[in-house]
Image (tube, rainbow, N blue to C red; front, top):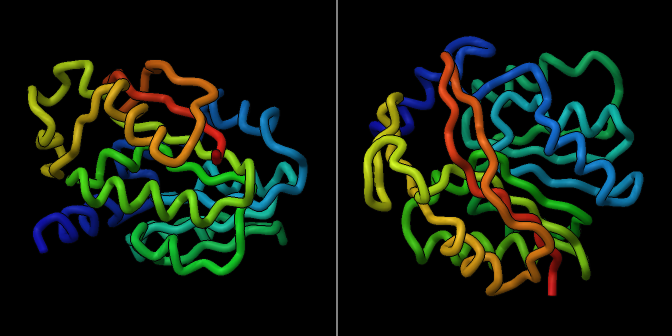
Length: 207
């Protein structure tokens, strides 16, 4: 599959992917303030795992999944101490298979990779099913409220990957099918080499 090949090429070496940064975004740091200590966390589309490793170091029990074998291997090699963290090479569609329930689930720059409305709805349903009662969900993805990469819902990234650009209102509508929104706004997402991309930030709680 062409897109799978593209991701394999992007993750040929550590820190090469245009969305991989060693510096942790402030919004990830703020997660610590909105969920109880020792919460069980799932990150979907974790890439090389920097966000999940950071949260594990802060005392959270973390499972992080990504469909890229190389990205997961890079992530595992970064673990120098015994934290409560597990990296698994799994596709987002496997979220519903977890028997355990999570306190917090997040995807950072991942939701835009799910390209059809039907699959996006299935994904939100699976996130809801994997959360405990009153568990929180955070999604951050490229926003269709800008003309980055062109216009329309499906656009092609500089890396050659098809991406779904939902507006903030569209993302809110999707999330509201299973969650109550706590915070919703636009934020700026950096991308190598020196891009600044408008993103949708939606924090919610399970109904």
